[in-house]
Image (tube, rainbow, N blue to C red; front, top):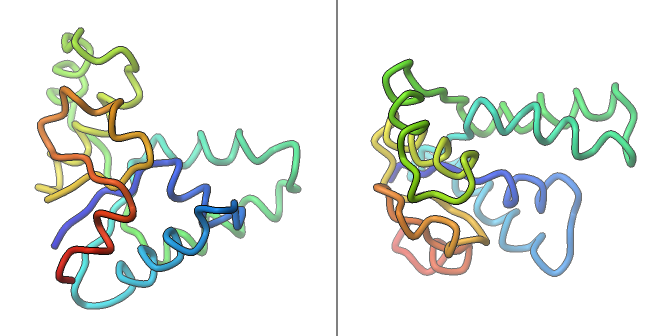
Length: 137
C-alpha cells in the first residue's frame, strides 16, 4: 500500500497533539514497516518548519524533520502536475490540490488526512487516520 501523509497528520505525530497522537503514531509505525510505503509532500516540510517556529528552536525543528524523513519518503510534483493543480479551481485550498498532485505522482492508494472534506475533488481518495488504521495493512 502507498499513502501520502497530509501535513496535519505529520504535525499530530511530531507535536504529540492530543487526541490525535496515537493514531498518527500508529500510521507512522505502519509506514516504517514493509507493508506501507509512506510519502510526504515536499511542500509540507517548509510548512511544518514554519508552523512549529513559535514552539520549537530551529535545531529542534530540523531534528524533527530529519526523523520524519527517516520514515516517510519525500515526493514532489512535476512541472506538469503543478500546472494542472493551478488550473484545478474546484479545490478551495491550493495546498490541498498540491497534496493530491503529489499523491498522484507516487501512485498513492490514499491520502491520509484529518480533513477529508477538503479533498472532495481529489483524484486520490482521502481517508481519515482511523479509516486507514482499519485497513488490512
